[in-house]
Image (cartoon, rainbow, N blue to C red):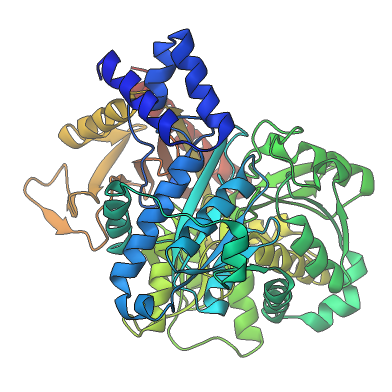
Length: 588
């Protein structure tokens, strides 16, 4: 983009932005003639994608700020009015908004609420920060038409984001996602109303305990063994960290009401958008759990738990030989599938045609575990909105299976039907019960995991990712995937590639069987998967929320007579070889 065009856009933004901090940032850049920074802020509009908005906080069209948030909300409002004209004409549309602990989350949430109110949409706004799963629960409980949560999930402090939800409590998918995007892109005028007027007219309602209490009751109701918890609760000590986010209120309340012994990391308990004690507030990253693990060692905890800032992701670490081992999302998902299925069978609550859902990049071990209980797998694209979509199809009878659990490799778990997004709060409660159950059987979680490896093969999963920042980033990532499509590898890690599944093209190709094709029954997405001769699957996709490309590899080795350690060593070596080869591709 030409320099003059960038400057023109910057001046246009200054004229529109009402928030002083963001307006003054851009005015200072214009005065300093800092074209490089201006270009980064204005070379494109921060895209309202299929998951909403996410970006660095600051002034500019390519940043998260009040103008960008309000513009997105005006587009969402316009789409709602067009989609539900009768409800709109009778002032029957409603929305729910939640927000987390990040900088400007309060301002962005209130700004969005007042835009919706100005468009005649009654808006329920939480009085203070709440987790993403509670937002989903609130939409379903209040029978709202849409919802918004202001969060950047696990991203670093400089980010914030905005996720849009539909009336079933799930993030928007087709056709609503593209419909909303079209309306956002067409916005020329933003309607606004002041807070007092919105409250006086009943267009804005502040909520908290009327949703908090039913949400917590729902989580407790899904536990399988309240008697065991009541009897043995004090036998398991839990250390928990919300990583300066939204999780403490609900995790402490739910687990505490069950009589469980829970100790929260004091330095990380309260919400803080600076996330001062961690580099990344992400339970996927072992360093994020360091303070909790240190406290776990000191207090001799049986399990360390962590949720991310909006409490949808959940991770754990467990003791082993005097140290704590971080359990991966794939491993915890396998343990929870095992526990949920086992419990449904033991309590006589297993439905007919049971199934669980996981994403296409999640470990294959979970399907093997579910098969032990006669439970099928339903696969979906990466992102919990697709898990919610399968749940919706099950509810509506479009598929015969009844869903008992949902999970994805990135530390997302869903136990209940009342929420349609990953829920770190319910996952914490279920994991606490699971830990107690296996303790009552004389086993740790790691010992149960080893038993599952013996039955289902020793699975090792690995992943790599690389960031591509700036104007050329998207182009570079697209080029990498285009090259893989044009010249798919015949081998990876020295193992033959038997099949290439191109989800964007909706077809599977067979490199060693010329002309053979198979259709792919999934929504189109820019994902490539390589199925290797030994059962390993390698997947490649650009991130939906960050400027990076991600590779996932999942493989297994049958334990047999070799023993678990030998099988793990063989599989780890194989995964490392694949990882090295992919790293070389990204560095070229």
